[in-house]
Amino acid sequence: MVRSLLGGRGGAQLVTEEPSLSRRSPTLQSKMGVWPWARLIRFCLLHNCIMSNQGENAYNLREKADREDQNWCAQIEQRMTVMAETCQKAIHDMRSAEDQRLADMA
Image 1 (cartoon, rainbow, N blue to C red):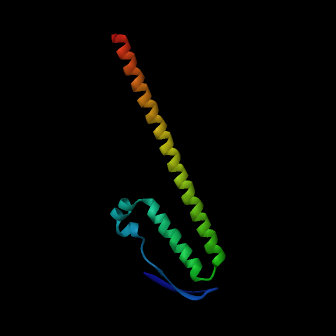
Image 2: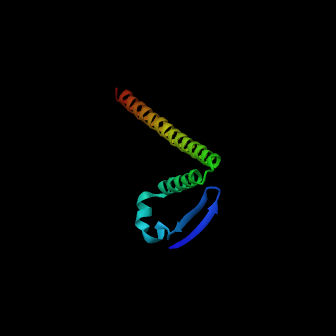
Image 3: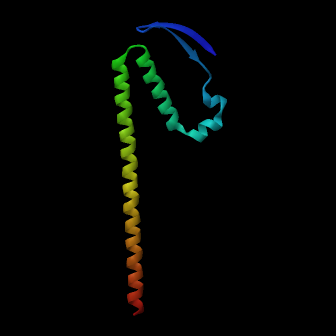
């Protein structure tokens, strides 16, 4: 573990660096995936900006995080829409094939 004392706009801060969790626990990373780690890092950066009185930077990070979340949700919604349309088309094709089969039998 490495410790250092940094001075900044908000005064001196104690910064602690530890080995990454991925090196200590690879199964934890595989269970949680990449997305929670990205959110955790973003939260830590946001918290650091707030604690060092850099409100504008904190606001910008929060805005960026909101945009990324909205983009991610929009991508998921778009994929679900495509999947629903594909399923509806498949159901329609199956019904048409069944109707054609019944018409051929009659």
